[in-house]
Image 1 (cartoon, rainbow, N blue to C red):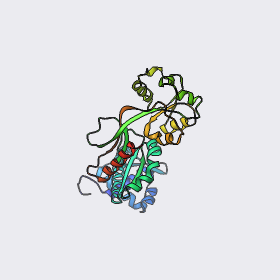
Image 2 (cartoon, helix red, strand yellow):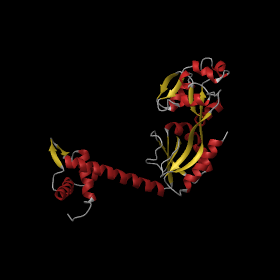
Image 3 (cartoon, helix red, strand yellow):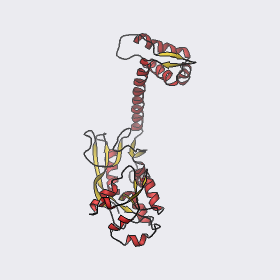
Image 4 (cartoon, rainbow, N blue to C red):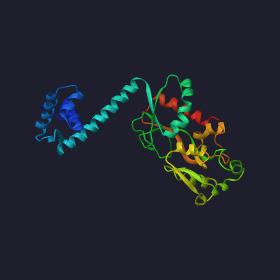
Length: 293
């Protein structure tokens, strides 16, 4: 093999498949080549490295220590290549991949998709649910509820302040009586919250001039979507961002007798794609939607 920085990509691909599948025969089947072709490519690598990459394990093969290290590098490199290639294909197709949390996706984006398509007909949007906070991994842009400072590599379009408030169902026992009382009455009620943001009630209490430790957080739900479904079922009083309950308030499915208050957080559309006019158009649309009635 000629002396160079990288061995043959054909050889690396054959090796990675054999290491992942634990079999040269299975690797040959996956890559649509012969068993001998896989063996030859692996042997090229072993000769260049000067040590074996596999050892026999029963009827199959197992990577040696050197083989395991090379396998990890191959998987990471091929993963980046696949992601980069997929991104290029999406861009060529004109699709913008937008990431957002499952709750924002289910309760805000999806109900507005038809309007988005009507108002921005030239924008092809692919949606990706993300639960990792404030991440742009694997997407072109992300619609986030977050607080600054932002990473230096991000281009951030500010959309609206985050506003949260308590909501309850008309089916909740004593809902009409409770709705007519001041906010301090919630100190005697079972409060629902998400495990991912248990501080939301404390943020609201401080903004309302109430002692956070006077509130009784009764039931944690794993996801904001489940939290609001529990509130709609009359199981307790929940706290949520205003835009995510706007449709429920309009339909009367939920009530917000005490209004909403700012948290200091922001709705933003973040990207690392400088100069992408599609992101700017989407940001303008989302800003108008969040400012709407």
